[in-house]
Length: 238
Image 1 (tube, rainbow, N blue to C red):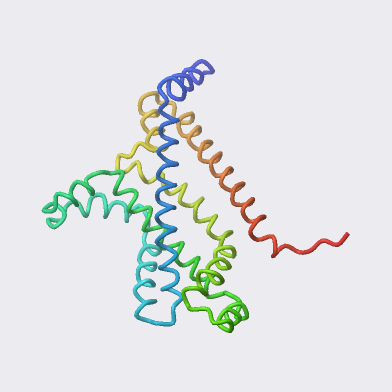
Image 2 (image 1 turned 180 degrees about the vertical axis):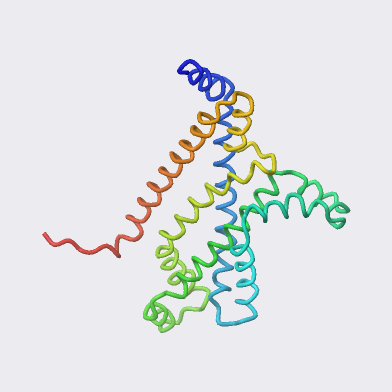
């Protein structure tokens, strides 16, 4: 048994690099989706928190749809559904984009995390201390400057713990990519299991790698919270 496990690690982890390449693909999906999703979520959150219904309602509908349906279904609709539409097939640019599983996975992950992040950031914006906002207005700040210098920095700091959970959730959510034939960590584990029939080892090592990356993300976000949320910590008197 030990010889089989050693052969598994030698052949699939180090020599051929299957597991390493799968882990790299998983991290690449996470970085791209979270980066684009974060950039989309900031303006959407501002619109979501707006008192103007014509701004807030469409964003609410977007977040409601993407938070109310499974990510797996969203990926299938984008990967299999959009490709079957004549309008997509008639456009060479769109067809070239949506026939690639990687592109469809990025779109699904990005829209999903953008929806969740929008609600997180919008809640933090709405919870902005009234005194801070009024102080900015009192010294003549425009709405743009008020958001840029007071509301958004404060809101993003307060949203950090909730957003860290969203990033970790997205790491786990990248596992749906294998359904679009993207060679992520889970796809590699499935292929290795099919080739070796070492089910426990294949999925067990994948689980340990997910766990290790989660541990690193948690540590990074805890360090960020200690730096940017230090003012919320209770004072210790010596």
